[in-house]
Length: 289
Image (cartoon, rainbow, N blue to C red; front, top):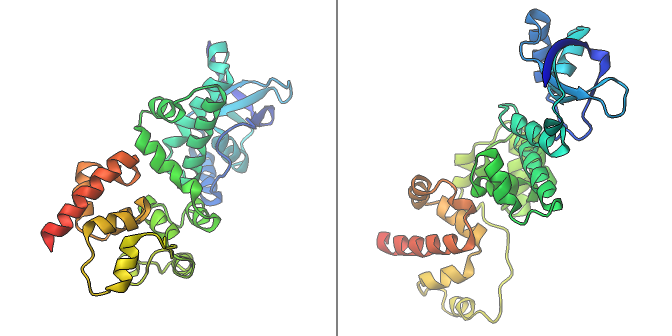
């Protein structure tokens, strides 16, 4: 059962488990100005506060509540949810997650944290295929989930760029994360100054990858060193490149656009599929020589 009524802002408290933690100050001010002019158009959703005081806890709409306070409002339209099935922690979190994921002002790190939070919750409940389950709940593919949570593995300074809204392109974030430290810092500095041009930056042939250790037992490495003029065999290339390096290599060629049309999520494909793409890429390289 649900009912709509005007509630005092002072009678509301945010949900401490709300997945969204960051609110852009500028956008919050913009929303406050809008609310001051025309009021809150979409009611927030609340439940009775399990702790008793304040009387209600916000399920969805904390940003509207904060903006209403900034706008000098005393009340806000709210839907009070009484249905017990809709008030389980699982149901509330899923609702908050889905609502937030469809917000345009959500930064990539927030999105990743929301999704990962859901995955971790499902795992804690004994769900073995948590990624697939989360994908089904959100109406997306498992590869989409993997792509959108990969940013959590990147360095803090890379995540900061995304969190602050300075860079939102997932492919660029991944590329910059894969750079060696000096080139990575160079890219970060350019982005911070608003002078970063991806096409120009990555067109420099020696932006290079992170240095990687060579396996002294790898015969292909020894052969290449002993005969530097020898033409590298495609099979040896397959041995020397890691999946991430292979993705970066393909991204520098016209083959990437072919894969994008065939499979937009190829960059986060599972190892078996990536191996298949590597073989096809090798053949493509040979044919275009």
